[in-house]
Length: 227
Image 1 (cartoon, one colour):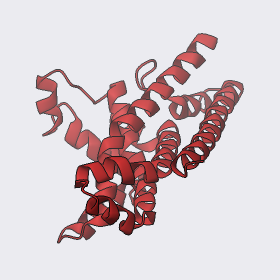
Image 2 (cartoon, one colour):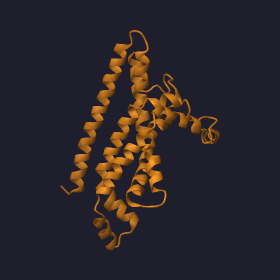
Image 3 (cartoon, one colour):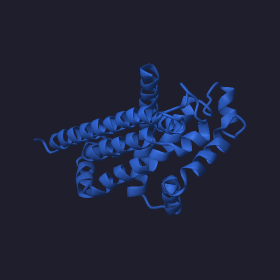
Image 4 (cartoon, one colour):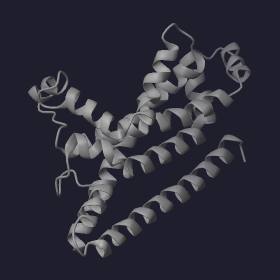
């Protein structure tokens, strides 16, 4: 039982971490675009980003299966170069990333909205280009928002269930993350105790992540403020 539990925990942490790190660059770009730019497709992009929050997770998982399955338009092309998502742990990470993406974008966008554009304008007036201004002025100012978004996304990815089970099924040792393992144990007579252990581990990981985020955000805010 100990081996099974810790293999599930290790897989869940890997899936959540990969989902969070892999989606961060795109989330940062999308958040800045939504915050600072206005263009004809702005509202449509905003809807597309937040759609996974509104749709039932099973529907999102179905769309992923259609698009990234072995016979899907994207999945078939990726399979030719050896990248497979369906019924693989990488698919679990993709499903978790898609479900967590809107939360990360929202957190970063709020941080970007809070940045005083006059500070960025002053940097450009002093000779810094747009890239340098973003790297050395904007990015440090929104760092707490980025950390908060990563933690929220990690927690969401860790608890993702509906899209994952629809897209990659519930395969022991391959796609069975903590939520799926808890669900599996609750379907087995006498599995309540094992499910309780998994629930306790899941809660513990989430609490540690939140506490760590609070500490990092506080230290980052002090660093940005020069304290």
